[in-house]
Image (cartoon, rainbow, N blue to C red; front, side, top):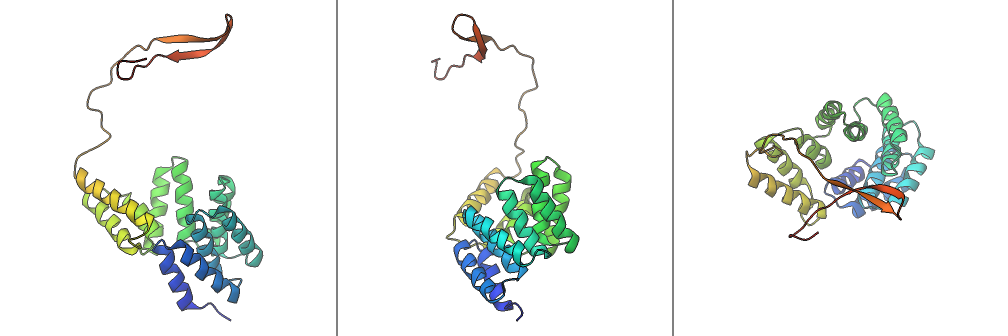
Length: 228
């Protein structure tokens, strides 16, 4: 039997709303009826990771690979699990394999974007985020990433679009509301700019010894509230 479209849509709605426990339960029920369903595997692993249930996410990713190893959603789920386990090279392999099957699969695009950002490949990360946003403009995680490519009013407007999708009672919604309020308070002021020019200076270091003759390193003396 084919996938239950209505059930998948409801599970995705709960996933996007950050109701991760509910989403995980719905995806689990879908997979009981169709164990090979790739988008349900992806949604389940993502929901479990977001709900801080790493061990369950790893097990779900392994089961997904056993069931349907040639599907973009399953490979993306495996990539998310590998990324969560700090296996970055493995995660990259899974995401790229997913994109070879489905070149614009949003989850895999976002996974690669996160990896490129971690490696300071910011232009590539931005291009991947923009591609993901074109394919999945209703995913709040994608919208927030897209918002971070913008500045000023468009940036705040995109964050507010993401906020409208989240369940207002979730921690994610509270954090995003604080983010939006902070950005609105800042307005058009430019931050992270030096207020004075670079100047040369000297810092006095002292030797740290272990006993009378064993050198351990160097230190710097700092005072807080006029106390060492």
